[in-house]
Length: 391
Image (cartoon, rainbow, N blue to C red; front, side):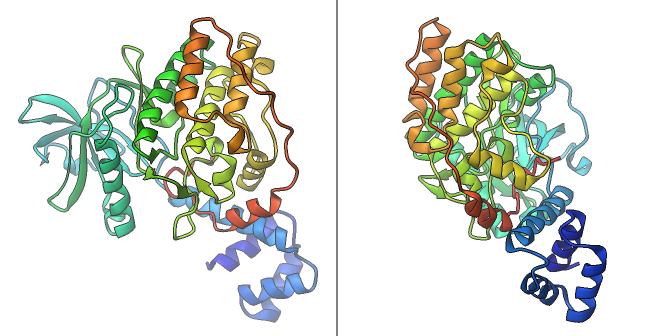
């Protein structure tokens, strides 16, 4: 089915177009593109309705086709699943593959033993269907180069990167623990623990930003909590140096929608302040056990992120200190210019609140009207490239 055909069917599903009008338009026009044009000319479909239908049909396709949004979830016992069982036992980059750890948007991650160092490591391998795309190979290698510049206790580093036996791979230290997503499956996290974990990630991101690297996909899936309770950031597959557009050259909207900043939802330039918003959304989820914005469709979600402010965390969970609650909303200011100036400021603020100090937080700005046109323009191009997390 062509994209135009899928859009027409979605317009019927959404109730914008009757089944009779759908069939009549197709029969008269002969093809879906012409039918769409004639239906708009006749006033039976608006441009905005067509835009919404395109978003929903594209999201449906990507949900079926995209790899799982789950990233590295390291268990103590090797297991097969989520990767290629044929790789178990093979030696790649000097590492013998022992089992599958998990899978992410950019490939499967395997537990392995580094033969030279005789120690456990994690090996991330680009799947064959991605290896056919030079764009995906470049993104995979970019992740390795970005992380290789960073040495920080709250960032999972890179030990080696290479290409061997037709496979692109990255070797990383193994982290025994679970993702923050797993932890949130048990409900909200106590404020003290949430601040400590988020402060560690803020410190790691501050180091990345000092090197001009913007992560662009900060979310609970990409935060590991080790057995000792240390938070570590992973998956720099979307990272870029300096300021970058939220839309790739191919018109892909990068990031995970629930934690994405308003500017990324509009397809505008993403910078370090976009990471601040995403980390704020992650902290919001940790404190309340709920997503900042909930919606019935991808289009509605993007619109809410751009146009509305989430309910204050302390109103949902009375155990959240009001100062911390307002700090989270400050991180999630719709206008990036009104957020904290740097991730370093975020880390310092969280550290101060951990010590019991009050932090000065600007009054929340009034939500801005408008923005709908920008959402439609970005959403019509939407292909969630790396973490299509819409259920």
